[in-house]
Length: 112
Length: 110
Image 1: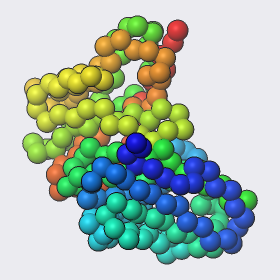
Image 2 (image 1 turned 30 degrees about the horizontal axis):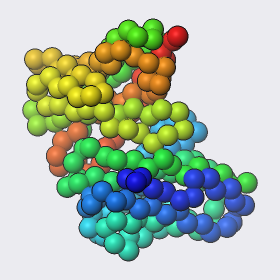
Image 3 (image 1 turned 120 degrees about the horizontal axis):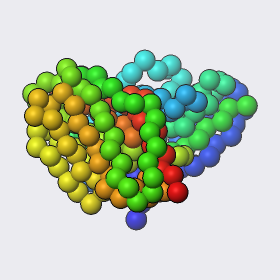
Image 4 (image 1 turned 45 degrees about the vertical axis):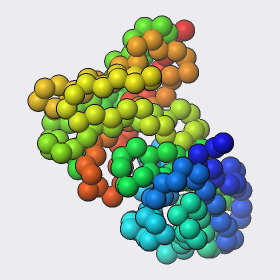
């Protein structure tokens, strides 16, 4: 069983559209994260939820809205997509906010 | 969080040990050293972590100097599948997230 799974793996969409990326973890972890990796390969934290409560909200446009229906799921909704949103988005989870994170395989978003 | 310095890239022959250095001269006493790697197009993968003592697991060994200002990740018998970007991260329990730097691109050569 995949520990942290993201869907879809690839997403190609036009500017201005709204899209969602889903993430689920079956590890029983209490904290989940969204990271963005841009074309220069830098990994940057976007959001973090601990037991469904938002604990990190970095400087991210408010077009990005995370939703955590329960502690096993953290979805990312993006409104009015822009070319600059093209990147690989990684979901991750950890227990008790410890440093041993488990990452998903990523969602490659391409905005055209 | 303490910053880390890693070489941009390294090569290693297949079957030989790969030794990846990391400097973290401003590390505090309660900060851990974590190592992750990212194989092309995949999510980062946790390798190992340590506080003061050397650590070993099925993937690698972590050697931390006595003054804790630097560490070395050792892959004892590198294979082609170990080609990846390796990240050394200093992390403290109160940190809210892992902060990734630019890492070291390790290329294992046949």
